[in-house]
Image (cartoon, rainbow over all chains, first blue to last red; front, side):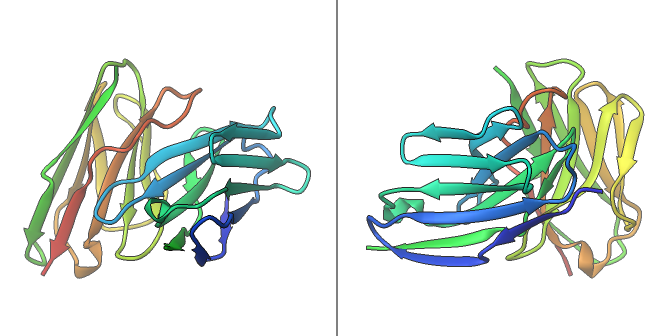
Length: 109
Length: 112
């Protein structure tokens, strides 16, 4: 079955800097790659997603890139703000979502 | 618009007691439904998914079971809870083609 690896497990950046989280997946048939943000005590919230027929997608300060050949995808957050601090999860799907282990992002003011 | 409901929000149960968590979806028909568990400080583990009434796929061997008695209802159960069943249980849905919609609000289960 699908296996998703996510790195790093923790990430600390200064406010205004960029943050990058990377994921790799094992099943080349996976065709949908969402990213979720989870704040303390809450369920995950979808923040951006990308399909396998697209290489890059951007939404304001957030962007996701996908390399199908290498089977990895990344989340990029620019001009980070303290409210970006949360746990971020990547996932891969060909019908059912398999999640990475999560990255705890801390943005220091 | 679609809405997903879960209850109860929190639950404290003794070891060996039964469990029933319910998830319902509004605003869509024939959704794929999912149960995930998140242990404290850890990622999300897919427990069960269902593509239709009475159709359940189990992802990991465990003490839990799932049922889908109606199109938009998904139930997570256990006959006898274990300490290791404690966690944050999340229900989610998708239309099979598109994104998995925002998760339900979740149920925090503490087994003592």
